[in-house]
Image 1 (cartoon, rainbow, N blue to C red):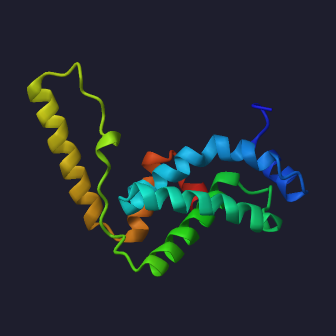
Image 2: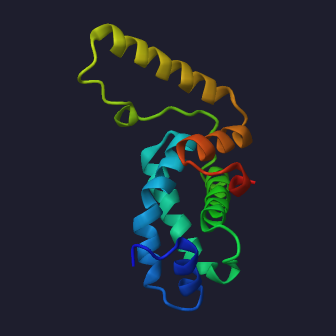
Amino acid sequence: MLDTSDEALMAQVRAGDLRKLALLFERHHRAVYNFFVHMTANSDFSEDLAQEVFFRMLRYRHTYDESRPFRAWMYQIARNVKLEGARKRKADLQLVVLPRDEEPAARELGAEEMLRRRQEIALLRRALQRLPDEKREVLVLSRFQNMRYEDIA
């Protein structure tokens, strides 16, 4: 089952085999969660949003078109969930701060190298904060989620 494509699994979910959604959840839950963490800077809220994505995938499975990339469809749902979550929560989702546990491990690095990396991470965080939501979203999907620009579009 590990060699079955995401598109084929989602087509099976659309056809009524709802158990296949568990495989898609296992494959993509962490990536969807990380997308939300990069967009919202709130791990608890991100977990709720990630779960909502998979609920909606189940609810709107009839809209899935297997001729298009599964990840593009999934992230379109994630984008909609994020926008709705922002409205419901009335939170300012413009601020992006990566959680401390997502910083690169630097146990083997010297003090100067660790300081340099922390400064670079802080600079990256400030730069991400200044981007408009749509541009930040494209950057997160392309660089952190490794999606192709064609799929993001």
